[in-house]
Amino acid sequence: MDIATKGGIDARRLIGVLLVVLALAILPFFLSDYRTFQFTQAIVYAIVLLGLNILTGYNGQISLGHGAFFAIGAYTAAILMDRFGVPYWATLPAAGVICFVFGFLFGLPALRLQGHYLALATFALAVATPQLLKYKRLEEWTGGVQGIVIMKPDPPFGLPLSQDRWLYLFTLFVAIVLFVVAWNILRGRTGRALIALRDQPIAAEAMGVNGAVYKSTAFGISALYTGIGGALGAIAVQFVAPDSFTAFLSISFVVGIVVGGLATLSGAIWGALFIQFVPNFADQISKAAPWAIYGAVLLVFIYLMPGGVAWMLRGAVAKILRR
Amino acid sequence: MEALLHQILSGLAAGGIYASLALALVMIYQSTHHINFAQGEMAMFSTYLAWTFINAGFPYWIAFVATLGVSFVAGILIERIVIRPVERAPVLSVVIVFIALLVIFNSLAGWIYTYTIKSFPSPFGGSFFPQNPYMSPHEMGTIGVTFVVLILLYAFFRFTPLGLAMRAAAQNPVSSRLAGIRVGWMLALGWGLAATIGAIAGMMVAPVVYLDPNMMAGVLLYAFAAALLGGIDNPFGAVLGGFIVGVAENLLGAYVIGTELKLTVALVLIVAVLLFKPSGFFGRVIVTRV
Image (cartoon, rainbow over the protein chains, first blue to last red):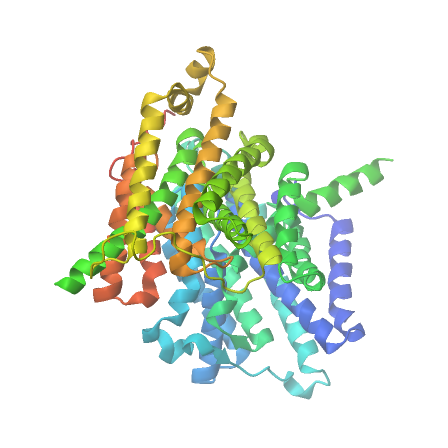
């Protein structure tokens, strides 16, 4: 059982979570700007994986195309900042809303698709995304193949922080808010409905769960999280271009939730750390090495540890406590 | 008029390739109801093998046959080692295993052969077919190869005991097992055949799109569209779908939307078929008993 499916939270766990948050908040002051930037990206991925996990882990709808929503979020932020001079923090709600609409709309037809077919449709979306972003008619907005360069925001109120540290703290704050919201969505009635629709769709419908509404809303919320992640990612990297959003980006999100743990909240964090840092180390062996490792790790996890890191840790903790 | 004819004919040639790959997808879908996302990358890897053989000095057709043999064995091994353990697993696990295969083949090809684009020879030289203004020799050869593959497959599944056993295993595994057919091995053979057909598609498309680890992404998408359009459990539908998609893609590309949105056409086609006629033109409508 994940905490999300239990009713409340006990004091011991609350203190644990607060300690982790505190540790994360002071982390950048011990790191170089570059490392801080890497951790910012890891938090961005954590937000995306959380969103994907709501859809795939909790609701059982397979998406191989979340890179597309990530791209929409990133481009929304970049265009708003570059064209309209909107401040960076104001682009996040916009990215979220636009992605929610796109996700919801994509979720409506997806209602009729199950399992392999949904995977196929979203896979097609992922493959087609870079080409759509390069489309000539949209070039005026998207900058075509060149993409858009944006500025890194300065810390507000003259705070004595470097840009990277400020952005890290800002991203961390957004992530915490989003995690609390997700925890609240998933621990109650909605979460149970999503899980019921995943495990026993017919029985769930018979019990009065409105499958169409829950499933398409889950798609929308999932896209909203991914879009906010995309916007934050664009701000952190200061650059968007079509070729950063290939099908392999979507696949790496899938890798992330499988490694972290399906249908767990903490899994998003483990998965994010994995897809952020493993390629960095593996790159030194060969350009192809990260993906070879991804593939092998996917197989290993599916065969040996289908619950991912989150469930493994939980099992280990339970064993220690029992002694 | 001549330009239109040219577009249609080269659409047919491209369609032949989509049809072959769609056929490979159907081969696996029929028996296991799995959509093999790694089919394109398997074909790509086979094509690299062919490239290796050719570069080692073998004549084209010997390299061709050798590649088919290796691909067949590799297909069987993949089924036995990787797919079998998840035969009864939830859809999500199966999809992830296919994605893992896709990623592994892609990165292996990148690792071994690097990501630089290579040219791949076409076996159909200038003198192989009569010269004409409408089709290149390679396009004619591709269509020819597609039809040869189709006839061979038809004969195999229609007239040989093994082919009939494979069909029986796909249609009704329980009864086939009672009749003494080794259903598990039939699935493995299906994978072997799919890998072989995919290899042919790869070797036919490589002279056109050039050889690189990502060459099959677009082709695979079109093959998906073709298979869905014709009905993903119907081989003839898939082949017909392949030709339709090939011609439609070429005509749309030449006259309506330009070449830069080709993949989007495939996306729209896939989603549209799935929404409005999920069984395709010739597929069986699936009715689930609750």
